Image (cartoon, rainbow, N blue to C red):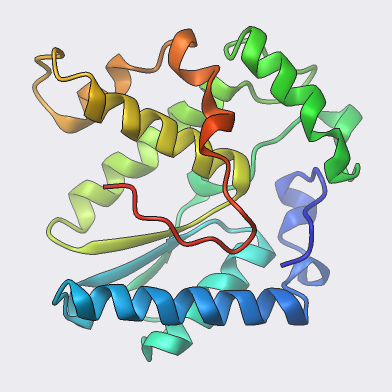
Amino acid sequence: MAKASLIRKENGVLPEYQLAELGVKQAQLAGEQFQKDLKDANIPLEKVRICYSPFARTAHTAKVVASVLNLPFEGSQCKVFEDLRERYFGPSYELSSHERYPEIWALDEKDPFQRPEGGESAADVVSRLLKAIGEMEAMFEGCAILIVSHGDPLQMLQTILNAAKENKEFSCSSYLARLEAVKVPSVLSQHRKFALETGELRSVV
């Protein structure tokens, strides 16, 4: 996949931001690996759900993976989730090079609840990701879910999931409540530890 620029939804959904040829190949490889993982875990395809961001490149990725799995992209097993969209970094970063990411990450490390001017903080992104996770849990209980999103949201999601897994002392009534309990600065500020490579497929639960 091509390196991403910092972009808001109004631009991110435009067709020109779909995958380039390399990105399509990476999505195909990820789909083939996912297919192998499903087979190894004896998970039937009817138990698979693909949940994806509305941005053009993630929708394209989800469509390629669905094709590899021979799942109808327009069917009930593939669903777009608005809250999986890319992080909005603010108007001063709009359509800027990905090389400006470190500026935001430095802010996150200092205070993940502080918003870049006009943009989303790490905590803001996690809040909407948890909303999406709650919806997926309610809709797709017992299913294997492939989440197709973006670098910052995915690494933040894994940060929270990992923290909830490690902190057994929380006696929360639900898994979602456990995730909310670890949405704290000391956890969110470390999200870069879970950075993903472009096109990487990673199991988190």
